[in-house]
Image (cartoon, rainbow, N blue to C red; front, side):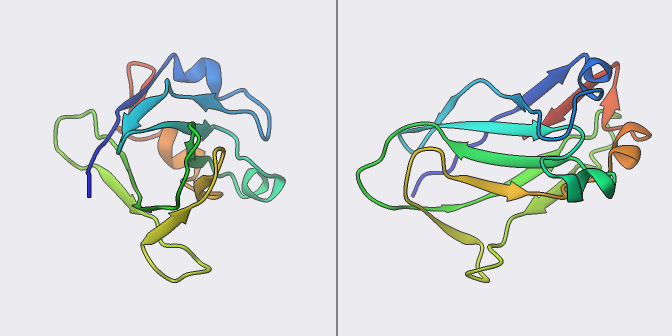
Length: 136
């Protein structure tokens, strides 16, 4: 078992929040467990449902080919930039498997939150500071 993380820094957040439904910002690819991954953040939601409810969307995507199933656990955090340590933590639990463990079977598999956090809450908090958002 290997544990890893990646800090996804979104500079110039105000520029990105005007994106449309289904448009995302992707992190650079990073390695964990010998595989490449990408974080995909949708400032105005990945779907119309998320958008209508005022929610952002956030996903992890496998960016490399695999020859056997991967078992992963996934957790996202929004980093509190006020230095008070009030990070928001979002553990992912599969609604189909009712488990924090996920089976990843192919390149492009994505896991995450269609309704991650309301953009109004995010933008009026200490999580966006100096026009920067940090997700890990």
